[in-house]
Length: 188
Figure 1: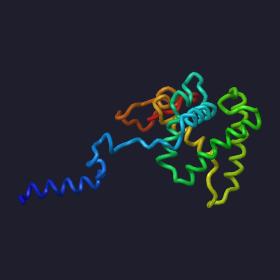
Figure 2: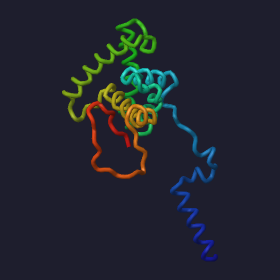
Figure 3: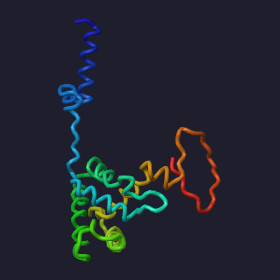
Figure 4: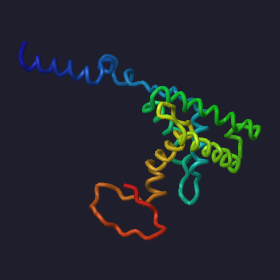
C-alpha cells in the first residue's frame, strides 16, 4: 500500500467517525432526517399565541411575527434535559386547562384581554414558586416559556432589526456611543 492511499483511508476512517458513519453510508438525504416530533402543529400554534400575548405586536412586530413558537420548540427539543422537556410539554396542557376552567374555552379561542389576565395570574404564581423553590426542584413551565419568548424574539431578525436599533457587524468599534433617554436599545 502506498503512503497516499493509506493516508486517504485514514482520513476517510476518522472523518467518518467524526461526521457519522450513517451519513457516509446513507448519503445526505437519508442520513439527516428531521426529528422535530416533540411538538405537534397545534402545540406550535399554541406557543405562538402565548408568545404573542407576552410580547404583542405594536409599532414593532410581535413574537408571533418572529415565529417564536417554532424557536421555543427547537430550543426545548435540542437544548433542554428530558425532565425540563416533560415539564414544558405538561405546562402547555396545564395552561390550556387553566384557561378552560376560567373562561370555558381554550387559550387560542380567548381574546387578548383574557389571555393577558390569565398569563399575569400564572406569572405571579411562577414568581412565588421560583422564590420558594429548592435547588433540586424543577423550574416552573411558565418561567421557561417567558425566557424562551424573550430570547427567541430579541435574537430574531424582526426583534433585532425592528424592535431594537440594529448595528450590523463587522463594523467599526465605538466604545462610547451617546444615548438619549427614550431611544431604543442596541442590538448587535
